[in-house]
Image (cartoon, rainbow, N blue to C red; front, side, top):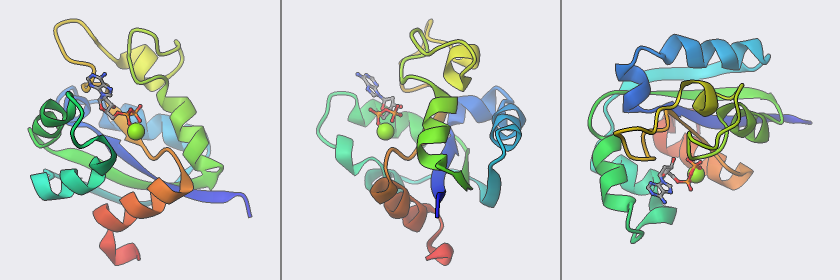
Length: 141
Ligand code: DAT
Ligand code: MG
């Protein structure tokens, strides 16, 4: 089967800027379905698990600080090749170079804020997706 599940986050900047509906609209317009959805402020323990691959990097501390600064929307999104497909909807990590038409390219701001404030997260592989879904939605496991 080609159906995949991916873990999507609308980061605290997206929630603060009232862009949750816009992000979910783009996901649904693409034809993906929501399997699970929650609004929640993540604690450092959850974020340490989520961003384990980045531990020790210079941007790790500010990233965890930012990600715990307010509520995020966490979603499990399902559809045909949804892992790669949502990464494509999101655009490149840096909003400056993210292509127009993408979430980060259209809506991301990089003036006066750090690059971690790039609105959304999407799992980058089937292994990451399984790990991240288990962290954020243990009841789905
Ligand atoms: P992505 O979110 O596109 O998968 P990533 O996994 O490489 O990017 O990094 C996770 C987050 O960390 C990213 O969304 C923003 C932040 N980040 C990445 N590289 C950074 C850097 N060089 N400086 C500051 N923040 C960075
Ligand atoms: Mg990543």
